[in-house]
Length: 332
Image (cartoon, rainbow, N blue to C red; front, side, top):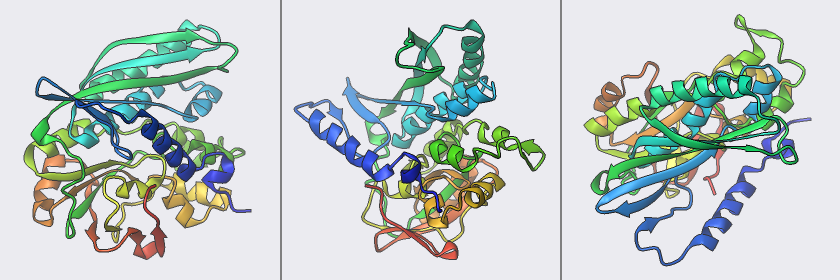
């Protein structure tokens, strides 16, 4: 039996349709705000300055973290899932608040979570300005962690994806592993193999590797290069490449190396390769679109080991990965 993300409990297309329905219900006369279906953050203009806001959680990666009592990095994941979205609109993250719901208050747990949040804030260059805790024994088993982030940008420096053009190149930034997406499928595929050794570490240790925070790299890029688009490769995998502009074909003809944890997931779950690339980041956690002439300058500005041009943008629709014989539909 071949596992899929939808069969394990998460249907990305259904989620996208639900989000679009929610946004449609919210639409109205809001002259200062810009709520864009498919983008990574919402925007509001205040006295000539653009304020960007987003919110996200760690998801079912927390199930593994609680199972193996490894809680000091989930705060990094929570921070990353927010600030990596904020920078996609060209905003500089400045502040963060967290929300922690628990079945039973436990200082040992909150202390470990705080360690990760502090480390994440340092990596992102933001201040944690507050938060909220809730004791919800009837709703929560263990705990759930989420947060919200605020960023700022000049209006003329926003990155909306409108500049994406035929001939642009795709620059891929390496991930640290699965980051914080696809864990419903990951846990299903690997449920009997968490304690196995993989390249000198337990499988669960690979799965709990914290999400890379790309803020400082991307801020350097934004300062030096005219960036046409920025993409956080989250749920939906490579399909995220089309989120800002669905009117092109995204050719990934030199993808970044895939970490062994993904190969193990594919084998253990008997998962088709197309499903893997349509669910996970497969070694590429973030992507930037720039003009071909700016590729070298962009890589210099990013100053990130392993980052490189992985493909280009051309006529057509969807995402094509030739050496894997994969054609993915656009993100809904």
